[in-house]
Length: 165
Image (cartoon, rainbow, N blue to C red):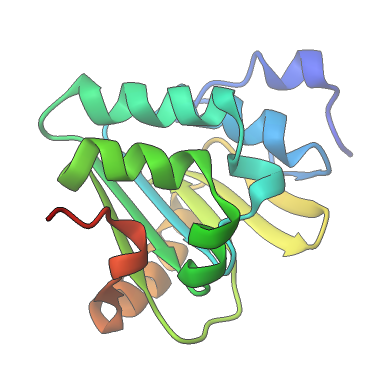
């Protein structure tokens, strides 16, 4: 069962253990992003503009980046050239904040997900749907392993940085 938008606003990262299928990915991502205290990992082929390319998500990620020197934001993408040409608010933010947001690229992978503070997950399972849980450490751990494996094989991408001359 999919909770209503008003109900999702009440969900607390690390406390609300309720898995659901989400069709309003942008709103749910924002609710989760604004609660992250230290760590964010995103794995996405095209940086899911329908989810992350909006002012609310950009502000939540910026707040996380500036919150603590221990904040860690890692974004692993596949098609950085298209993303860079098309434009993306988080990509622009990463260029502005430098190493506070790390981007890497990898040639191919099939999944798309977000892991929030090692406990919250948003796992895109279809073009317009995701499985979400604000407290699912076992799944977050499994997805973190996938992310780490990809991250180690990925390379920093020049399309995600500004050229300084």
